[in-house]
Amino acid sequence: MEAERRRENVLAHVSKEGLDWPHLIDNDYRYWRALDNNYWPSVYLVDRCGRLRALFIGEIHGGQPSGTRADAQIEVLLAETTEDCSHGS
Image (cartoon, rainbow, N blue to C red):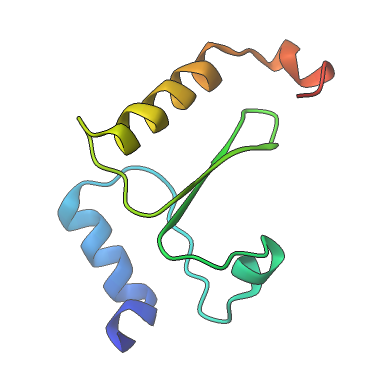
């Protein structure tokens, strides 16, 4: 949808929904291509060291296997510290 490409529309929707995390607008697909992404939706989890640690392809729903797997991986990442950055994963 063309409306989803307009920054002001994205910001308005993010505010309306109370979403308090960063949102990337990738209208030229630069980030998409950098990740060699082929699927929509795709969710990438990045650890506090900036490393890509998990990829989930498709929708994620709480209470379903997709949500359970994502929640478990998020808990792993939240338990890590910046000291883990020097050990590599």
